[in-house]
Image (cartoon, rainbow, N blue to C red):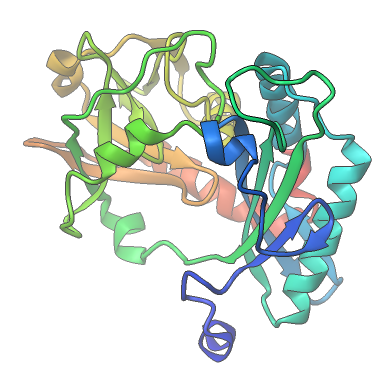
Length: 304
């Protein structure tokens, strides 16, 4: 916290941006990411350990894999892995030089600069943006007792072709998040046109009962978060089973436990959704502790 205060990195304008390999805060007004939301993004955390001078980006390989899949779906040229590695090292070295020891790394890939109109040229060069922000720790009271959620009135957009990926067209989440200002709610739950629970405005959702984990099916919409993927992979260590199913709003009260995930907060228990109260099981506590222990013991978090 001393570094954050000294550097005043809590302000929104205090960040580092690397655009196509150069430190800059400007993109072309003709960039298709700006004009049409024609692009993708990934958000992850990084940390520096002083004793061995190691900088690790959590689940870097998984993020690159999803980025590659997403580029393929959207017909955007995937940047070479060695280029992304080079840019990653460059911006993290810059971040360390400011005194920051951990933070949030965001990658934005747009289709690039193009002319007017939806049609794009096949040989267009993508714009590669790396952003580094300070990481704000999750409050201990949220980790210990859970958070409150609410249902959003704004519906999530249905598009099975783009389901699962983090494209730049996030206006449904923007509108949903504008529905509340109170700090009482940590996040809002998005529903599809059939009132099926999909995900949060910034999180993925899990329910549990009888030590079986359930997460909403994302075949038609929603983001298949990296942390969601990791929890599904690792849940067999703590739960008897994990299932991807359709969870309708009218049925969510049948579960006795709920938690949310993303790459920044990891696993965060839910105390309540509307009037429904949830408990926090030993299995969930063990899952939460697992990620903290791994962070302390394993240098290369990309191996998880």
